[in-house]
Length: 239
Length: 84
Image (cartoon, rainbow over all chains, first blue to last red; front, side, top):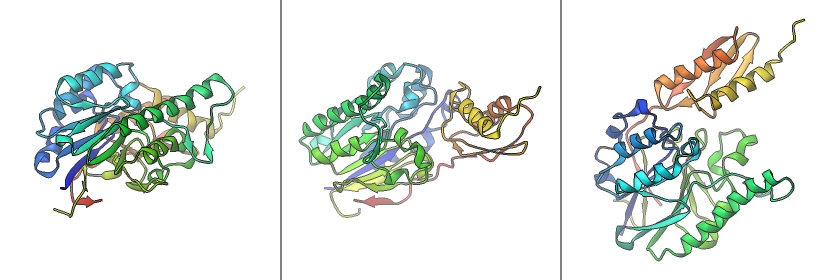
């Protein structure tokens, strides 16, 4: 049975955007079964901007699953923003998983983080600052592995802000790849198994990629898509 | 005595200001300098953000002529679905 996944990221809503984004989502409940939002919901990560996100995305008629992005952490209000989304009946993943659509779909993930890609990445060595940077990503990947393995659903998706592969970064300067994602995120998904990884963060990147283990990756950052959201169908023929 | 400010550092300073200034917090804006002309390229999500980016750039590089080539992302219809 087909599941239609709508996905977008990097919407960067500020208080100026209040009341303007909702029109892009009209009719989404007829086009998709679930909406995934891949982080950078806000510009500065303030509670006020978080409220704009809540108001623009609530009561769409389908489950809405968010992860936060680096912008949403900027004002140290990330926990509050996540709580506001949950209070409004939506989901906010924090290295956790949710079961949706009567057990047909599991979504695991969180913000993710950087570090780079195999052969060209930082490692946990040297100064404490360097170790902390890489350890943050490794610990996230470990939590995703556990979250994914706990999902006994027909399909499993990983939702992230940072990229798990470099293919979907094509178009960005290669020098900044270590700040755009980490192969550790892909490695976790490949080890635990998933049907799709959705991410954002790389505005100048490319929509389509694949992990070394063969999981499809989609960069749904709004500037990459150029459309309100992408729709991916899992588990069946085109409708 | 006048100290020469190499364009390389001016561009880096402008890019950093655009990323860190609370009015913009915009990452991924490309800054190029040719003579006393400063070119901004990239994408933002709102039209007024385009203007704020140019304002912050102008303040960070006084005396330069700012060419704002930043574009505002057009949000189109959802379009075709992809079967995976």
